[in-house]
Amino acid sequence: MKSLIDKLEREHLLTHTEFIRLLENRTPELDEYLFERARNVRLRHYGRDVYVRGLIEFTSYCKNDCYYCGLRRSNAHAQRYRLTPEEILDCCDAGYALGFRTFVLQGGEDPYYTDEKLCALVWAVKKRYPDCAVTLSAGEKNREGYQAYFDAGADRYLLRHETANATHYGKLHPADLSLQNRQRCLWDLKDIGYQVGCGFMVGSPYQSAACVADDLLFLHAFNPHMVGIGPFIPHHNTPFAAQPAGSLELTLFLLGIIRLMLPKVLLPATTALGTIHPLGREKGILAGANVVMPNLSPRDVRGKYLLYDNKICTGDEAAECRACLAQRMQSIGYQVVTHRGDYPVTSNPTN
Ligand code: SAH
Ligand code: SF4
Image (cartoon, rainbow, N blue to C red; front, side, top):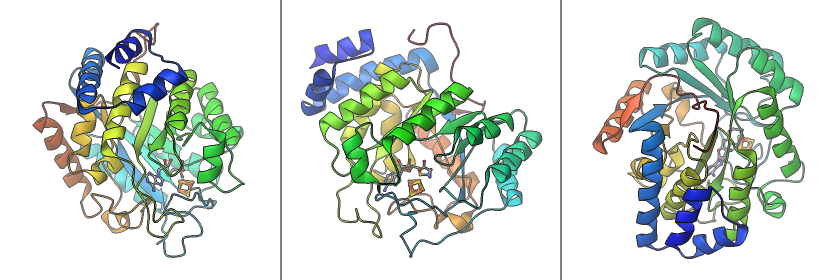
């Protein structure tokens, strides 16, 4: 198996069959071998720097009904809120003072936030903070919408592909959501000129090793700037309430694999990873991740943006989250840096 890891590091790709073999033959020893290789690649490109993005969860309304998500429209128990542009700008003010130079505006697909309103919002943030990057994560839109946000100043867009296997996609979503449209969105975003993040949940219901191999091949084909992966965690008011969570071990293994496959990719150690294990994010960094996304949402709404159960940091202020993460990174010998943290631009993406 180590020879497969060596091949992945050398060639940045394995076949579908080889990926499955690697995934099905994990051992603690192989994990350590992979993490060391992945850490070395990460150190080569990013040193011990950890990039931060301030996450602002601006609306908990969603018109979609993804089976895994606590914000799905059929969850009548979900507490819905939306922040006003003024409240969002207040979050940015607080974040800027704490050193954040990237703001991620994430939310459900909320019809209240029309293209016009989202453009005005992006414009307002960029006007106040021209030195900051604005990232949107607001779901599936048509190309004109994505173009309009880009023209208003949005720099990046996060839209996880969720799964690259069409049958699996159909088991996670109702029939009105399709893998084709999800991927159409991602290609449009890239074509428009965004720095784009895709990704998937690890251990989502019905996910097989073959599905994960499909995801990895999709990542290779799409070649995103960022890849967000985190464990699936059940939410008690969804159809997947009784499904098991994804594992820490597989998530870390995949972080390592993705670092070897896309050496310079921006790879967050996610909140979901920190939720399934108290040291999940530290372990994620040590497996090859290089980004953390502390929460900048106002404290009174944090407990309402619940994609899954037991989410961490719902009681903290932005400053506490920022300080806590800085300390956690320091404890493993890494340091949080406060520039925008763009994807490194060079002529050869795999060097
Ligand atoms: N509405 C937007 C952004 C918010 S959801 C969208 O769907 O793209 C952001 C991400 O949270 C989703 O892409 C999904 O991968 C993740 N997520 C949703 N429910 C989850 C759960 N139960 N466990 C882990 N991650 C989840
Ligand atoms: Fe809505 Fe996103 Fe949750 Fe799906 S994952 S229900 S689109 S918030």
